Image (tube, rainbow, N blue to C red):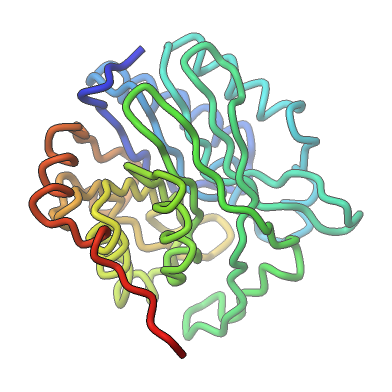
Length: 277
């Protein structure tokens, strides 16, 4: 268990393939190294279990919430290594037979699944890369609720990838008491180069909170290329740790004293005013 004053975190960066077994092996290897370095919480990227060649592959992986091969794996892994796991996104069965939720799952250090967040903003865009067209709404159902989780260090807000472009979601997390926010992602190389660091640092600064952004980072078997640059950012927007591309992790210590000092000395979130339209 980690303390209320400090939390050592790791943002794991992957280059997930279209083979579930290989990805699970990679997760366990990176988690073991992260925990060995002192991490008490490990954040996995979006699509950690599978980066599909076809959307149908993701749907075939979909599990019922609270049960399934991948969720059992995560539960046992967190208990074995006595660390919290924020599992980026996993397809979870929805009320629509041919669509799933893209869901972030949270496990404590006893292997208990404490919370889940269904991705609210779905990435439908045309990008000038080899993949070209991205239509998450063809595979996923959008979530509708913001989610925070109580941890010994403080309140953690949950978000996923494309959510980073929507500041109103992060304001809702802040209003629910978020002290730090996770943003597991699979940003494309082109959009990542243009906006990744800018968005991550902005979300941290405007909400005076820590932000942990675990990204996919490399060329996948599907042909898709993701940006990488997983990073951990403090409430002033300083990048505490960053990984370029490839498999590995960024790690840093979140400090309650730093968070409190920034929010006291620069109390911008207390100075908000609602303007009439």
